Amino acid sequence: MKLSEKGPLAVAQALSTLLEPVSQAVQGWAGVIAAAHWDLFRVGEVVDGIDFYVGEEELGHIHLNGEVHLATSAALGQALVAGGLARPLRWGGAAYRGWTEFSVGTTADAAHATWLLERNYQRLRGRAEAELVAEIVALQY
Image 1 (cartoon, rainbow, N blue to C red):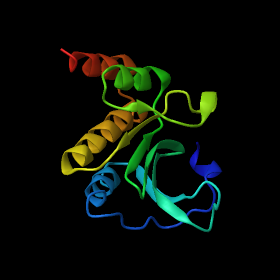
Image 2: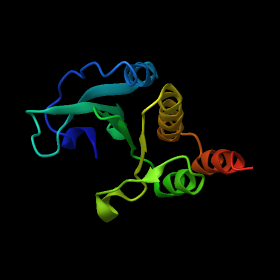
Image 3: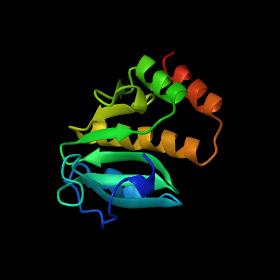
C-alpha cells in the first residue's frame, strides 16, 4: 500500500523490548519514513504497530504482536518462501501478491526480521531483484 493510502500519519510508538531494535535499525536507513500502523478496522483510532516506507512505497510493517509483514515483489517473496526464510502473507489475496510475513519471538528472530526488511529495502533503493533472489537462493546451499 502507498503511503498516501494508509490513513492519517501519526508518530510511530515505541515497540516491545524485542521489537524496538528492529524498528530502530530500519528507521536508521537512509530515506525511511516511519509512521503508526493503524488497526485495519479502526484506522485513525487504534495503533497496531509501525509502518516503514521508502518514499511512497511500503517497505513493510511490524505489528505489536511481533508479526513482520514485508511488501516484497512477487519474485523476492517467492524466493524468501521457497528458502524457508518467510511465509506467504496469510490474508489479502491477489492484491497482496509477493507479500510475506515472519513472526518475531526471540532475539534471533528479531535479527532475521531486520535482515528480511533490509533485503526489501535494498530492492526499493534500486538493487537488482535478480541479484537479491540469487543471494537468497545461495543461502539454501
